[in-house]
Image (cartoon, rainbow, N blue to C red):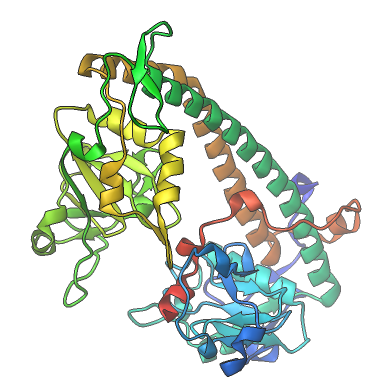
Length: 469
């Protein structure tokens, strides 16, 4: 059905630099004719409201009891949100993961957001889909200004939005709900396979780093209750006994300093550590002067990065020469191994299921979970002789390669599905594709909620919440 979609017969210029042409029968209406801003502070009555946040999945209810994410110290400055309101984050627009969301909840949200109510002259669902598409493709740059890339509320209200006829808006919303449901199910199925493959990998890793490769090896008590027996020739030192240095990174002073778009020294954050690798998306830099000022956290080859704060607590990666020169921020610790342990073996052990459990058990749950340097250094590690460490590493790499390759392939397929979904939504809400006939032929299917496998960590997406703090 999607493959059969065709363009409209006639188009006209919209006059909007980021939009181009729209179908000839569509209108163009200033947003002040569709929505109006409302800011009603909850004050002393904040206890009667649920706390909401704008996320990639829309406006959600925050679960304060988890301790995840950041919260304003004065909830009374939050503003009321009603079911059907549109919530915008209008600053740092290029970096904000989600600029707009349609609330399906009554509640309150931090004052850093901008809340708009519908005037009832168009579909709020279509309005949200249109601006989500513009946001996904980062096409709103003509609207924002200043160092914070801010869209002024009056500028947004003066901007025109395409308005198909009401029945056509309903058809667009219906069709995209159906299409998104199908794509979400496909993504969810691939995520389940990835989870199973990761379980297989973890089982192989756990067996190798706690028992070695010889199933008949003689064992001895490790002296550590949760670790149990280990091979007779192994030792069980603490991480701090296997390292020259354990330290956390440093965030530069904001006085006269900033994270650069380009520069000589990489500045690695928690978001740069994923699946045991250091990623360049996003990529940050600092200058040489700043790097010298925070020299205690300058990184060296074979340092092991370890996320000590936030939703990705416990993620690890080994620094290689290609990543240098580099420094890191306060959410990331680094371990500089000594001759007792091969760096990759220590990093492999830190990724074992038992250590992951201990990390979360020892983490302090405050505004966000965090692990102390003392707790990190006190984790025990079963250590074979160095030649056996190398053998185990080679075995694990070989044994898990088919699973790793399959996971990479599935993750790439998920990325392609997300890209396809983004393009489909943009083409439909801007009139590049006509879905009227397709919507009329849709099967009756239940409505689909957000793709739970696509959920992002609260810490990473609540940009306006963090700003309010």
